[in-house]
Amino acid sequence: MEERELKELLGRLRKKIDRRLEELLPERKEPGARVISAMRYSLFAGGKRLRPILFLLAAEAAGGPAEDLLTFACGLECLHTYSLIHDDLPAMDDDDLRRGRPTCHRAFDEATAILAGDGLQALAFECFTHPDLRARVPAERLVAAIHLVARAAGIHGMVVGQMADLLAEGRRISLEELQYIHRHKTAALIEASVVSGGLLAGAEESVLASLQTYGASLGLAFQIVDDLLDVTGNEEELGKPVGSDERRGKATYPALVGLSAAREKARDLVERALSALSPLGPPAEPLRALALFVLTRKN
Amino acid sequence: MEERELKELLGRLRKKIDRRLEELLPERKEPGARVISAMRYSLFAGGKRLRPILFLLAAEAAGGPAEDLLTFACGLECLHTYSLIHDDLPAMDDDDLRRGRPTCHRAFDEATAILAGDGLQALAFECFTHPDLRARVPAERLVAAIHLVARAAGIHGMVVGQMADLLAEGRRISLEELQYIHRHKTAALIEASVVSGGLLAGAEESVLASLQTYGASLGLAFQIVDDLLDVTGNEEELGKPVGSDERRGKATYPALVGLSAAREKARDLVERALSALSPLGPPAEPLRALALFVLTRKN
View 1 (cartoon, chains in turn cyan, blue):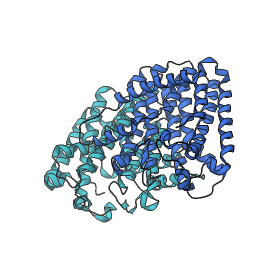
View 2 (tube, chains in turn orange, blue):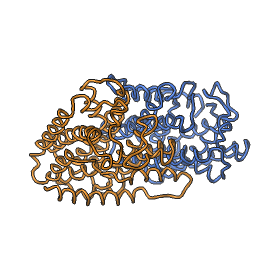
View 3 (cartoon, rainbow over the protein chains, first blue to last red):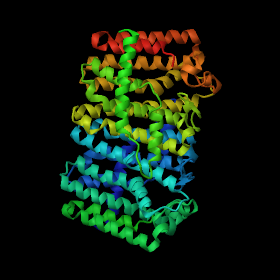
View 4 (cartoon, chains in turn green, blue):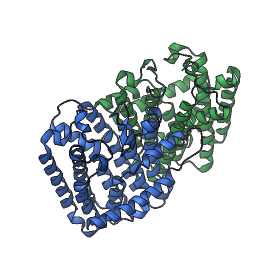
């Protein structure tokens, strides 16, 4: 699949996801509606929708009707957005800008941003159990997929990863510790997005194993490229200042092993992701193209 | 059921819940383990376990094998504990003490407390989909119950309720707005705990309707009694200073309608909760005793 074709596909999927998210989280008028506005502010801030797209492409690669699974995909984006809002908080990374706009706590206030993150995490699980999914997917598969995602978002993934990342700030850490951070903070949810797509599509064990290797490798590659962009990227394309990792003493792959070793590691991981997909044949073509695209992305 | 008998039952259930929570969240040794310690600090701070107990008693009242549902019950306590940790944060209610001990962000730090709350919310959904439940409960029921709870914890319950509560601080609000706050912030999760117990036990529609009225009424009564205790309670029994609501200009039932009207309202609500249970007969006896106990509690 050519890059142009992939970009068209990504655009189409992003539009579908955005439309469904809009239905799932409309503005409201009631005493507590401010938090809904804050959730919408961050949810509709122009995200790439990488996790829900990976989920949908994995479901299709596994032969499932991805169309039926859109609401689950939206829940994954809610989880990702919640984690960005909380990571940006003053007590955490204390970021003022995200995708070129004020972060949630800057546009609203800290309490509202904490609640917006909390609300998005709850909304994710509301999506995962939405009646429109219950009508189309066997409940056993839904429960298994939710379990996987809850672990990856929580204390077997994102949450312990962010904790370790904060504790690593300003310290010189080992490559092992850095890999723990990347694996938990970023790769776990990407991997869970891919695997849950296969799971909901009814994929058999061997296909799930392929998707798992793909997701885990791509997730790590994604984080390394992120770290590289913070060093070598273009502020305008990124929508945030470059060099912020170094300024705050963040442990990153390029800082630990150097730029060229980091680039090589990212390439190796994408290579690994691609070869994991070989048993899946043509239906996995978009997943392959996406892995290559992640490697060359500019933001 | 006499109060002594009820207290024994509550003690037994609390022990079971605590034991299971201990299994579900053991200490760990890894780079991000600090957040696990913080989660445990707040989860094992001597909570009453009201929500999981209500859930288990509702399941038994509906004729279900509550023993099989313990892990789901534990998830409800995780949700409640997460909400306490986040409510106590400096950006929210800024509380230093909870149950006579430093709040999570005082014992650890703000970032860790935010993550501990996030981790407990995720752990709740990990519990709700735990393999030991999947072996014992039809998956359709699990999915329906999770949906209900996710709504009550999120943007149809706790999260919008806490938002409205914060926005009401220092303002004179209407009784209508106060009821919105109570209904969402406190009653929604209590109601969802009761109804999901019935749901997982396979209760029919009419029983679920009884449980819903019971849970919603009891939840409101619980919040009014909470507000009353903040005015008339004993600091030592409460484990926190009294009069804090008034000091921070919190809208409360007693502040809005006076002490005696607030007491009467709580009694009326418990009355309503009790009469909703009449079709359920003897298996609902513990739920009845608990409703009366909530009215006379001292902490």
